[in-house]
Image 1 (cartoon, rainbow, N blue to C red):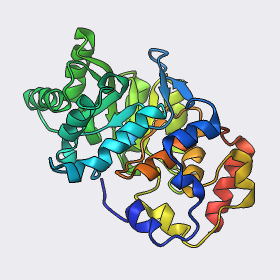
Image 2 (image 1 turned 180 degrees about the vertical axis):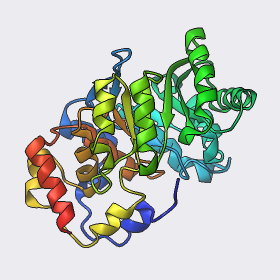
Image 3 (image 1 turned 90 degrees about the vertical axis):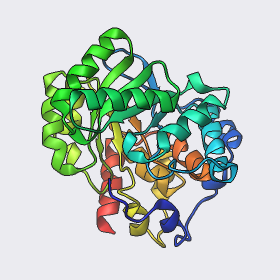
Image 4 (image 1 turned 90 degrees about the horizontal axis):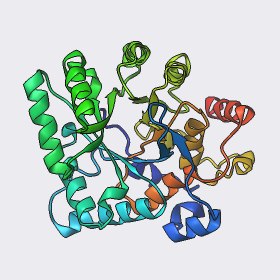
Length: 309
């Protein structure tokens, strides 16, 4: 994955932040008087909350309390607001270990939905790496094991199918972060080989709308969206700009929710996973999973607005 403008850096230049960002988890719950929206995983009918958490960069920290305290609060608020899915990978440095330590110490370890990946070549190397992920994340069973960036996927998919049958993992997935991989992801989706597919999609990078999202829905494959803010570029794009007044019609009162609700309005999407180590940003992100979602007219209006900037 690429490291461009971070959300934290972009927000430091934006003067149009709303009060929604400053809400506490309890205030968000009180204001909405409801739980986060859920969507069914097609292969099982299990329901998954619409907004989860990515761990790339943000969870790659050391062992000190100073480095980890912010993440403790992120996970606490995520749990209280009904968020479940935490996505990681061996590629993300110490993220898996940090997730394992913090969730184990939270008292709520079994309330999360754990997703990680295999990111290597060769059958035994993949098995060894995945077993290490289990150890780091302190899991006896992984909710979702994904093949990272399609790496040696024909080899790993066989192991994952075996592990699913043995009950070691619950779901099989495959991922990528680049538009160039969408065609191959679509072929795999149509083959019936996976329960989940994860890919990049945002209001500015809309290639997935051509056919990948529809293919996933038509073939009963759950969708996780990465890069929902286009590596922070969306916040740079709207620097100094106010939300359009009509955004309130869709219960949107921050730019993060504008971008996330555009994605979540597509019924093929099961979960979007913006990454953050900031509790206020986490609460703002999760807020996109509450309240009204844009209808078709709203989606079109949102896209036209961003295209006009």
